[in-house]
Length: 268
Image 1 (cartoon, rainbow, N blue to C red):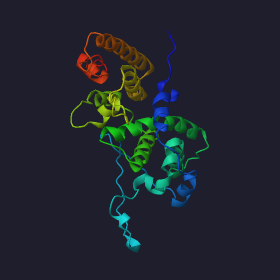
Image 2 (cartoon, rainbow, N blue to C red):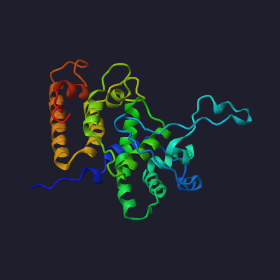
Image 3 (tube, helix red, strand yellow):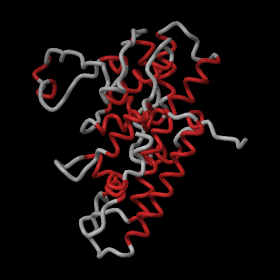
Image 4 (spheres, rainbow, N blue to C red):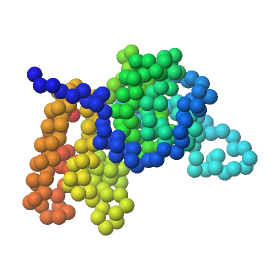
């Protein structure tokens, strides 16, 4: 019997590294602000089925001192994120296990115990998933990321809690089409900040889609994850071969090819 990798504990190194490189840490001590705010209770519902956090922003505070920033172009952090300062986001994104530690503390557990280590590993794997879920609903905010992470991790600690539904994630990815300025389709196919060459190369498209699709592995058993990887690799080879017979600009993108070929339908 071959040995299979535990896809959850191994994390999603490529996707998370790519995501972390896009943001810089701006604060160094979110734990202090969490301690000052005190423990709060996490909602028992899930962000998975709705592809968004179940936490609701707090009501905007009164605009004191005559500043217009309180009512225009801003939104107060609420839900679980309400225990942090907005400037904590860089640190929380770079070290998502800090959110897991605060969840444990809010539920009366010692973050330095065995459960803290398990939840810390899970937080690392779920960070890119939380970012993806925000993008899939049309775009993400720092507050939304923190609340989605708190929701995902809170469910992992709950008896009968919701887990990752890989079929739903694959449907979201395969549902990304070049209509209505779809942000997920743009991520999978377009090159940012390059007006002269806007489409990702075939190799870049394969790499980007593989990174994103690997998030679905968080909800798969090891054998299913292995079969999924094999199908994805086969699709990449077939797509690249098909490009050789197409004029430039006439070939479908990688995500379009996978959807049209139905290669992943057996897993959806």
